[in-house]
Length: 441
Image 1 (cartoon, rainbow, N blue to C red):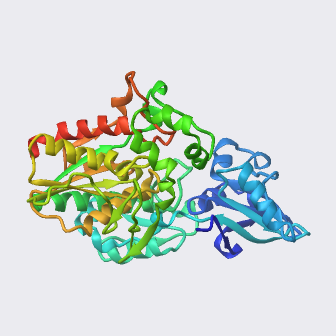
Image 2: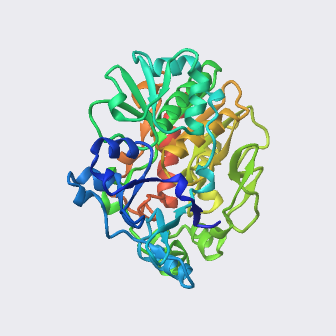
Image 3: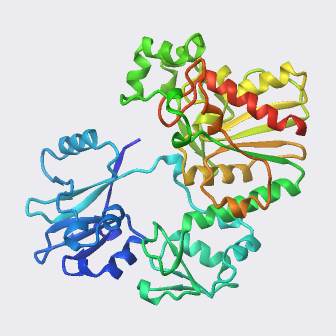
């Protein structure tokens, strides 16, 4: 999959150097755009404004970055772009100028396919939407988008929704729906993605519980909450890690199957496909990484069972960096078997794509499409980007996994600083999950 794609200048915010001194105008634009491009009187690209720069500085001369990274279109364009990407790995967009300094187009980083989807407001409860906006006179927005239009169609008959031109038009009794973060303090604002996730999560969890199923949320380990002696940091590409047998032994110890996952190059087999509007794992067979029916194989599943435990989440649920038999779902299944609990099978519904708001949305959308039955169990290894205060009304089974790693361990717990878990850490987490769900089995 390509890393960058072209976007036209019609899809980005741009202003004159003179307008860049209007603070209210800048705040309004940064509600919906990550970057503002500033032109001089000759139409030459003078500089850019980002949320971070604007937040840190109050003077126009400081928050306009005139030393921005860019490339000149020509024979060396691709080589120049590769050089910038290599030097600045987190860069999101690269302006492409002509020889006179005028902006032609922008190379923007492509969002991972499994974090790209349209919002389906039909999956949400109108009652929870009304509760979210209760107490506000108007719902306001600046930039039209499919997300905003979907919200307007979903709730527009019961709540007044209006498009505005400036922050100045927002009143204290209004709520502002934006696409980025709000830098002011005088208006109540929500990111449209947060709105969708909050309403969707409440709807999904509520429907699970009234249907007789059970829902457990485990927040995956967060770097800032974990003690550093349990972490291993790598500045190298993951491919380099896979090629270094000594490093693999240092990480995984005597977990030989996990080492084979890398030495057999099975990590290259992880691909995705789109099925009925959802991005799932692509079926594959290999030595240590296998996917059947778009789910990674869970070891030890009973031939006969009454109920199913679905484990949803990102790469930690899927089992990044370890073999099939050492994923959390497989280890939990083997724990159930050992305890003589044979009426449950465990299904690995983990995907990947990072821990963020979009991964949480994708998890809840996928749960909606599962064939869940009474007495089935959902174990959600997620990030929790939605408003927990509102969601906790529906469920009590919320647990954090970070604290488990705030003690010294005899073996390595993290593969890298994401953090992704080693086989040893997966064993610890699966034991902890079992301790929390065993009374519901």
